[in-house]
Length: 500
View (tube, helix red, strand yellow):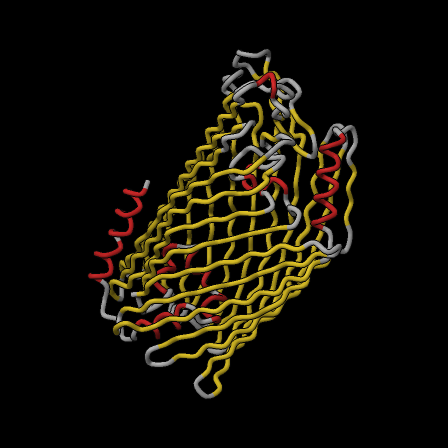
């Protein structure tokens, strides 16, 4: 993995050498890329490879080392644990090669651990729930992840033709019973085309995705195991046919997905932005130890809309989306055979979300200031057909964030602070015929997610010019969250690197 990572980093150097000469120094370019009005519309560029040609006239690359620390008094989501410590090597580059072409790339290698993970033995929990394996014992997990990606866009006449590819590989494991060892492979490729009009560019994207996970769960001494694995199917349900034993087994996840998107954006930064996207991912779970047919099929469908307006020193952005997750349970004739006699869509999870944000910037003397209020609403309704179960949660967030930036010939310093308040108007939890310990876990999770919380944030970034096109930087951030009832969590980050 490390060899491939360094080869990916070295691949950035030819692009840097062939990039057109930048008109600004490295600190000025960094300021342009991190400007708040640029951040408000950054997603319209990064989500569509053809639109990366309009991201900036400047080039910028960054290589860094980063440490992330998370600690919670009690886990908000027990499947993710009550803490994590990750350290990684990151590299990213955007190179404007000419007026008609641009290239970009990124890579990372991260190692770490997650503390006290419970009710989940599967990697990529947020992607695969509720079709996971779980146990009540849990424990710490060691993690390792390697990822790289890149793209290229070139203008031919009125059309911008682009391609982007991304690959992620990772593993999670534990040396204490139960002993999961999960190996993940995730590959996406995206094609994009943009068509120029006098003031705007219309873009179309098509993406394909292949996802695989191989999961081995072993017990060093099965007769003495304190917990057994459950093949979860949603809201406390599980396959009794395969669960409640302490035997080693192997599970495979096989996912295929696609994305279709269209967007409109101005050719020269200022103006209206809009994007609509539909994404689909179908993942089958195969119990390789007992069957040659899938035992569940998870269908995830997501539609999103977003729009923004950018005008010099201020911008507005709003968006929303709908996600439907359906878990279909398969019934095979008998263990070891490959005939599905029935399938039922037992679990459904409907998720709605909407958000809006405004950003205004102004300059006073030699300091650039920014203020950005934001509002967000999210609602999730999960149901299980039989026995009938239901969980409905909603949350509203109001937040405001501000920053001050000092730009000097040899230094750039940016300080950011903000606060967010979270409230939940109501909740509904109806769980019937669920094991007591699973019911307690789900009820507790619902209560935590529906509780009130306050989340301040502070960060500081300092950059020092070493030459016109080279700088070093250090950045640190702290984001605590304080919940009703006295619980809290803290997230700390520290980053050191170079810019060129």
